[in-house]
Image (tube, rainbow, N blue to C red; front, side, top):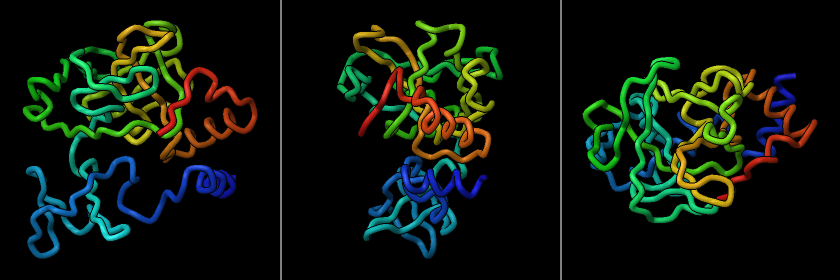
Length: 215
């Protein structure tokens, strides 16, 4: 069964196994400083097991050795009508220990650097939005200290890695500048999550009903 699921995911979402990290969690380090088999860019040094080459470029995998938070849009952007748009809205990301709030990460004052986090700025290719302000009984989620995603009532298989979500402030016809998350279908990497999502996509079509995010 697992082989069939992985084959289906490979067909719909692309290969998931030939590099040290998913493409959605990689950053371009082609112009980084090279020293032997190591490449340094923006203060991070990548050894040969944490980068890969593709189409003439070199991509690093910072989340292999750093705590990562995946923000859907850029530093000074929020998601407006499914498009990353420049905004003055302040995006503060709450960090939790399970369900207990610990502190906010504030991109404007770079608290992520003091607390040793790395931001991945990439939206999901496909996904379903979790909006706790609208659906608190099912969509409440908690970003953990290690960057993982915990949504105890959303039936998505416990803790999810950073490749399976992105967070941001959203503004559209449904919510007005509220912090929310997209559960991504780009890079599914646990059997439980794969089985759940495949069931949603291929059996009911419910997965994309609330929100589809296309790049």
